[in-house]
Length: 388
Image: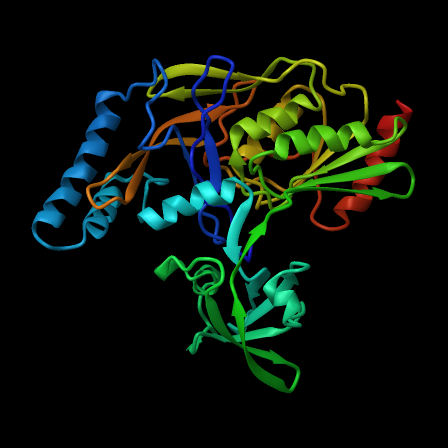
């Protein structure tokens, strides 16, 4: 998604539970957030806030209201109040940012279609260009350097800021609006104007390896990702093992992660969570593929909903988890609308894996540690599982 990790907005889902937990990263640097139903929706039955969390929300709202009355920034006042609360995952978002959450989780965004990273020397390098996007049409390629956006030099800036400029977040720039970029390739430097477009996200991809192995990669849990995983599993040849690649997956909609878990489990517990001490549970649908060999790949960029799925597969003995320790984001936030339309989110609970392990601040330790040649080692493990 143009170098930015997913933003999030809560959703409702059926089966008697008007609740969707959302876990997603907010910054490429690693901050992540999860939330209960949004500020313009009714809270689920029994999910009322405790006096403590209600008080924290009231403190933030009061700070914002006082700032508005004084003619200062309500959002900045709310941010200071959240900071004072000591809430590690507490955050305040502008109205436009929060609307982006919903857009992103619907699997679409407005941008130019490039991914980027900051090199050690501070320069911004294009790492990937989406086919058919404005960036691709203009001839931008992976490996090109981004020098400027609308005349502002980008060297040394965080990637999140650069992506924000490209998307036009500050002005809520819609599709069709122009953005001027300065590019560099080797000794050649040039400027060009791109027009932002509505682009879709493809969160689930599958590819076959030699030896009867299929790699299913889940980049994020946007809307429809769970069903896409189930469809991908159904298309895998009967004799093939599966590598489920969750590396760099920053989260998304937990309901989608539960649906993905249902592709590999025959019902049963996926995770438990609490809302101000009120315990709840998430269960997989019955009928998943439980006999096929499965290896799940994770790393430090595996967060939130992706950790929930990993923990379920590991605790239920369904997959061998390989890679490095996951990020460790397992808290739940409740959002509330502030007087100026911005949104504050404060932590109200945490989730646990089926065996009762806490994830927040700890992450999930893989069964097999591996930093290099992970995919090759996964193939070896799958071969052994297939023979057992």
